Image 1: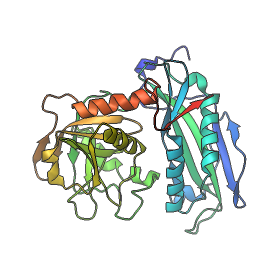
Image 2: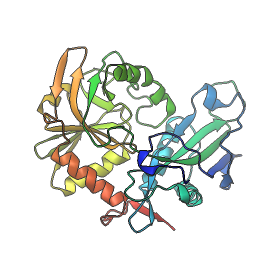
Image 3: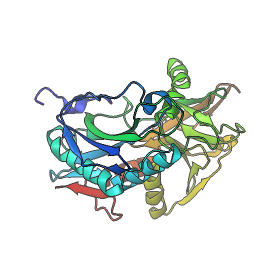
Image 4: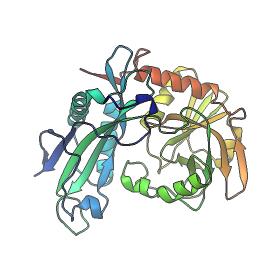
Length: 339
């Protein structure tokens, strides 16, 4: 611990002391188990390896000025993991068991929660895998739920600074009515080729268009997209977008600031009318967008003309982080304090 420079942490993996595991066998979930090994021992014919029966979540724990550790909206992550389980026919983990596992894993690894004002947080990764030896395409007979944690710094190296994104029409993140609305690894595997192309051209992420008509905005890399125009917070709605808990929280804060929240299909051309734009998610919170380049049409949409985050993004970012760190009261019941 002494050799960890909290303020220099990237967004990667650092070994911590313990993880939590739980197994679903014979139609029911067992007890939570504490483990110090980083290794999972699974059968080579497990369905997670062959047929993609795997889902995951991501949430964070923050140490406040008062020294208390706060976890943000873990009930929403529990519900979303249940949604993922329904989407790919896995056993649903009860919300209470999910929350107990989160509390336990954070408490056991308390020494890895970064100090207040370090810019870092404890990232929590719940994971569910289909187990059981079978080669037929059918749901697994057994499941394993795992939660591990690791201290992380900002997702983007530049932190809360605007970056450029691009549109690549020949790539889709997910199919219409497919797995786009649930958090499974396959969606992220499908985004890797386009993501690497974007990075090689100097862009932070790909802004995907809807996979059916290529007319509407969809996800932005591993995050949701939103735009601000005048007094409106506008975010895309479709059958292939993962519902972001961060976006849901920002919509609530925006409404309470007096903004009109619009969650609807957003035509590509509407980008030209935005005063601000950003991607949002657990990892980055808000990552402002300075410019969107449509590489197929050879068009550029400049959003942040002065290269700085816009006032609405700035206000929302600091408001959400203030709640997460306990600097402002949580009037929404979003925070769980780990005792």
